[in-house]
Amino acid sequence: MTDTSSGSDPTEADRELMRSQAARLALDVSESTLDEILADALGSAPAERPPAETGDDRGHRADDDENALLAVYDEPRVESGHGTLVGTTVALKDNIAVADLEMTCGSEAYSVVPSFDASVVERLLAEGAGVVGKANMEPFAMGPTGEFSDFGHVTNPVDADRVPGGSSSGSGAAVAAGTVDVALGTDTGGSVRIPAACCGVVGVKPSHTLVPRHGFVDFAPSLDTIGPLARDVETAATVLESIAGPDRRDPTTSSARRVGSFTDDLDDADGLRVGLPSTPFSRSEPVVAEAVRSVATRLEAVGVDVREVPLDLGEMEAAYLNVGSAEFVWLLEQDGVVRGHGSGYSEELRAAFRAARERGLGDHVARRILPPAFLDARSEGRTYARARRKGIAFEERLDEAFESVDALVMPTLRDLPPNVGETTTRADFVPIIGNTAPFNIAGTPAVTVPVAEMSGVPVAAQAVAPRFEDDVALRVARALERVARQ
Image (cartoon, rainbow, N blue to C red; front, side, top):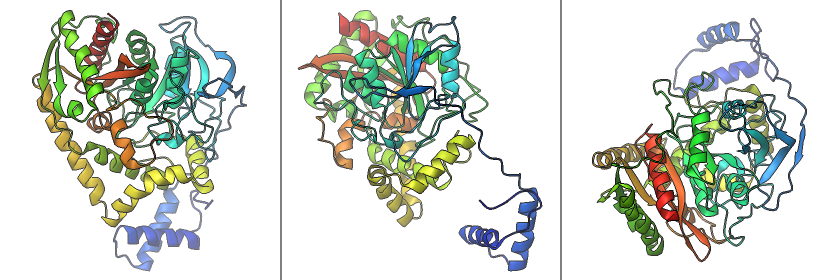
């Protein structure tokens, strides 16, 4: 590592780095001026500090039937006997730091044993939860099916021939199998809601920035969220209430929004206006669309006004893929940090990210990120900018829809969960992410809940509300859950 401690003499490597930065920024500066700037930069640079020492791994590799869990504690870790989650067992997706347990992000290239807990883990423990360990996942959260973890395929406990959904595959399978009561996943384009839908459980994507991401390895910081999976809406709402709210260690969290209770009025849906948006239904397979529509219309029995509303999703799947992959490329270039947007300021996690990049991230990650990275580079950033403009236009259309309704209900997946081995191309992703990814671009809350079954396979509905109205999305999801069980 180049010594950049205060007062050090510049090396030729330092000079070459300064020249390359000047060229990258199109600054025409003489060599003598560059030397002066370099001396000034080195004079003000903080001394490099080694990464913090990590603790000993107190756990072991899990051996559950679904391969849903990775590193687990020898006994569930409990730090409080008081709180709303006493007696609740929890697993954390393996891109969320848990002290003294190896974190891999689902990739053999990435390995670190953090000496600290992520913000969400601290909050779960404070509420009395028992942390079991880490949940399997797609490498670096890339993939909607749950088939590509470097640590083995996750089995869907509902139907082993169907995918468990991804990228929070282990989180969904562990909850559905009853291995844990609750799991936290992360959702960048549907990665909480998709496995929840495939495995027949509840999944919550909170409003973007509602839940702090300190101690989490980002995929695409402008899209990433952390949210709970549980077997019912009330439990999911209780967990969300415990982990939401600002944290100074994640500067992206919204301190302007006061987090209220998500459980107090959970069963009160009377008077809510729910819209059934046109495009998410028309692009879904008829059998799935009809199953969700049938349950949604029954909301009227609990006092909900249900109506059709126009909403054009446009080409948001492509926009999502371009935005997400471009931001991950930036993370690769900067060892896990996107300045001003990310939360990866832990040197332990940055060092692991840097080491993973040097080892090589594998073909699965390459297939996901290289196409949009190539297009973005060839277009000199216009591909990313175009995707962002499409996102802004979609948010405007979404705001128009919310002028007449409080929330939207639609199919979570456009078709039944695919069979194992069916999803092989980017085009195959569309039926899986088409109804979920647009709401990551918009930053709105979205809750998926199982509402029907076809030949033993779950069908899920998704409730979407305006940003920071997470309580409304949860109330609608709870109403769907109630009428579906009648």
